[in-house]
Image 1 (cartoon, rainbow, N blue to C red):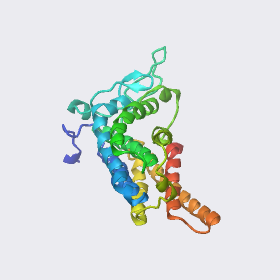
Image 2 (spheres, one colour; image 1 turned 60 degrees about the vertical axis):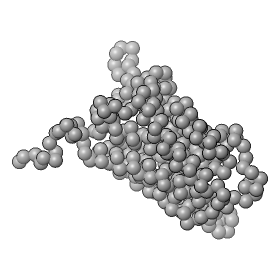
Image 3 (cartoon, rainbow, N blue to C red; image 1 turned 60 degrees about the horizontal axis):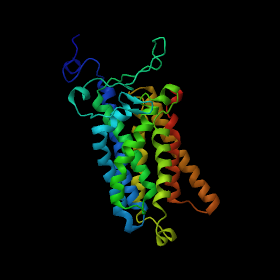
Image 4 (cartoon, one colour; image 1 turned 45 degrees about the vertical axis):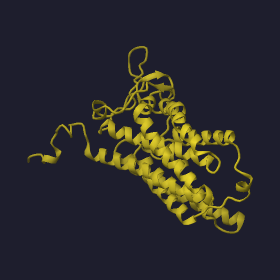
Length: 313
């Protein structure tokens, strides 16, 4: 039986390309992108006081766009390119056709033992570098936007515009290369399935640090800071939850058993954490809280990320 034309190799579909894996990787990247924009844009705009709504939404929107440009100009290769330092890759643009259409490889830096044998193998997914660059961009973008949550209602937008590219280049790329890009932690055997350290821990610590240096909110905001639209806050939280399937499901770089288990684990953990947090609100305060439920949901999603698919590996 002749092979269907759709499966014959061509310039746009080389033999190593798996269309299923590539399709899932682009879908997963888009789901993660939707977490940030419009997910966190809506969530941030609605969870703050009305006077801070536009500023908070624009912080997330600006970060998404700024990170993408910085990522393709220099960021991706600083995080996943050839080794410059044990914690940093060589920065270079990721826009050339030759680079984008070749088969993806992670990490690009290969370490060898003194006897010449490979210390840690590289992974070559069945899709092009373009898919990998975009997938990892969405991770970088949501890291910066999660950090923004620590300074909502207290940071000037002009200061934020300068902060975003600087933090991405001098902080995020260091953690990403060290753990995922072939840096010293990667070769020490440190495992981070889908960003528990690279994304959540780094954005959390940076958020605490930024909040400390920026300073507290205005006295009037500290005394009363109610959300201006609870229904929209739930809509943003829902996009964040559903998008997390791409977050953890795309980490294996393939549409395989690991991605299936990771997606299921992600949703079970989010639901469990939401219900536990709601029950605790009832136990301690006598009634459930919508904000508490959203916090519980996010806690569950964050906690499962470092190991959502690890027991399958």
